[in-house]
Image (cartoon, rainbow, N blue to C red):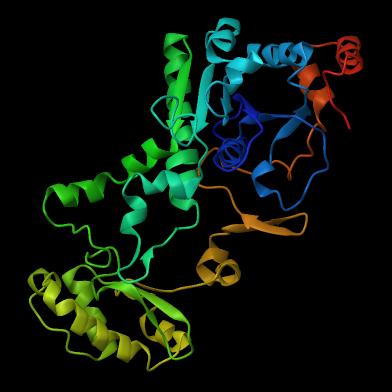
Length: 379
């Protein structure tokens, strides 16, 4: 069965980081994603975020190549790019030009800082974007300073996911209005949005700016990771009173009574954390899994990436697949009637030029003419 986005055509201007991941998500859900590359090249099986796409390589400094992109835009539902503000305009492919060619087009713009503001045209990476949102300062241990959470919070959480959500919302609206629009997806905007609940805690006076001083940042004894006898770690998230009581039972420790009143008395956290740490350190991770896993303690072993692949729950859910010898994440989320799927492995840059242009209505003679002009890059 085709995925839920079957019949939707999206043009992806090749880039790095959150853009390719957004394109992968759309392709996994059944969209036809055409990647515009600047040079041809071989497919790399490990380039997971290019899976499910088709590619055409074009010399965007050549006016004939720009015209080819505009021809593709005529039959596309959406386009997204991840360049600095103004780059697409200089190429002759800015929103005004593209929307004039196709008024229904949804034009996604993926940047770190957004299309305007003092930093709009400055270079940056995930760590910089999350630094100005309050998120980075809140993550880490008190003594060691802020810890970069990979590039999950910025690039992929505040970036890719918000771009996809925004484009899908605009595509849905375009079906009724017949009009496209520009989606300005800035990583900083997305991460600030992700901080909504934490901002609510701040507003309610229940969140401290000090790292490791809050119930969700490792400050609380009932919500943290603990080292086991074998040097591996387990995670505990026994927030609710009944789960906390079960934790005390499984640990065979008197952790006090009083439910939430006791749980949120911060002055007791350090002592209780030390008691739990000492108890967890008395057994291996496997032993604790035998005691707590599958119970309502809210417990899980802390797995590395290789262990996660073979973890029974992940295997049962088929959360990983293997394509061309490369283990990779399966499509998410799940759909009951129109399941997402990986149509094909990573695309080779420029490999699908003829197929893409034929589908866009160009004849073999026209395609060859563009090829001879140097607009299409095959090598």
